[in-house]
Amino acid sequence: MSMPHVTASQTALFASDLHLSLDAPETAEQALRLISTQAASADHLFLLGDLFEMWVGDDGIDSLTQRFSDMLRRLSKAGTRVWLMRGNRDFLIDVPLPGKTGPRFSEQCGAQLLEDPCLIDLQGTPALLTHGDALCTDDRVYQTWRATCRSPLWQQAMLARSLGERLAIGRQARQNSEAGKREVAGGLADVNQDAVDAMLDAAGADLMIHGHTHRPAHHHWTHQGRARQRVVLTDWDAQAHRGHLMRWASGQPHTLAQD
Image (cartoon, one colour):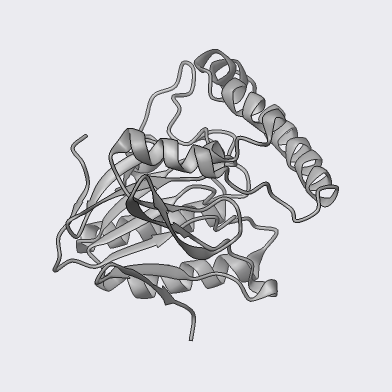
C-alpha cells in the first residue's frame, strides 16, 4: 500500500476509541450521527483503533456493527477515503478465519486497513498514525500480552474456536480488564516519552496522532533540536459527555463535536 496522501486542499478527519457496543446505545448513536454528518464532506476519514468494545473475528458482526459498516460504505461510495486501524480491543479485524472465505471487514466497509504505525503525508507534513497501546511500554504485563495475542499462531488458535466460545472468552477478558483498570490510579497507562521519540525517529516524522490512553491533548516538545507534536484523540462515552472528531487544518487539530 502506498503512503496515504492528504493534500493541502483536502479535509482529513480523525477518531479513535469509539468503543461501539450494543450495551452503550447512546455512545453508539452519538458516534454514528457525528461521523455520518461530518465525514460526508471530508476527503479522508482515519479511524485509529478500538472502534469496537470487543471484536472476536469478522464473523461476529452484530446489528450495530452492520450499521457502522453500512455507514462507512456509503461514505466511501460518496467519495470519502476511509482508513481503518486495529486497536487493542479489535486487533482481530481482517484476520482470516480458518477454512472460511469471503470479504474481510475492511472490504465490507469500503475501507483500507492501515498498519500500526503508519506514516502518512498530512498536507505536506509527515505524520505518524498509531493506535497508541504500543507506546505504553511501562505496562510490561500488557506489552507481553500484546505480543502474544498478535502472533499468528495465537490468532489462528483463537479463531479456530466456535463463535460462541470466542464471545465468552472476549467477555471474560473485558471483565478482567475493567477490574484491573479500577485498581490502577488514573486508569489506563500513559505513553512512555522515550517510546514516542523512538517511534518518531524510526519513521522520520515529528508529528504523531494516536488514541488509546483516553487523555485527549495536544503536546509540544523539542527532541534533539526538532520541534515535535503529539495529538491524542479522545475516547467516546456519551454519559461522560466525551466524543468528538478531530479535523486537521493549517497545521493544527480542531475539534468537531456534536451540536
